[in-house]
Length: 212
Image (cartoon, rainbow, N blue to C red; front, side):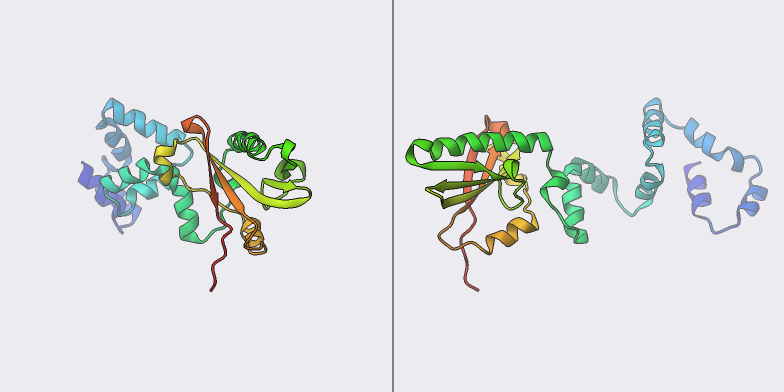
């Protein structure tokens, strides 16, 4: 039954000819196939039908992919948007992949951390630029007596620090271009907030200049 259904679906013969040859089977073929499914398989088919993605999923099922390859795709489904963007050359920024609430929480953690590292009593001021002035190139700037000490951008993840190597973060074009304008003596830090490890913050300096 399966093989006959597959043959009809892939056949180049005219629909009218198939209807003429298989008068009883042709109009009942879909119902017969459904009747062969287990209860679990019927539930899965219903989920697919109700998803609104029937055509796309049918094309995926017809693609030249093995069960193992499809299982691997599902197992890494959260990485798919990143991979597609890189593959297709699309622009990628934090807003495409970051949760806004998590980003705000991460910035709050970094702000408190910077205030502790650069206390007001020693003449420092920590300015939350992305919040106060909608600055697109960095989240914070630290100053001492109006002189810039460093710039800092917060990058939060729900993962723990032990598996952080599997968590990408993204930089806007404006950030990348801003880096090119900094002198080698002005640090630009990425503050990685690991929400899955009690909000540990790790600072990484990325403003070092490399001669071409």
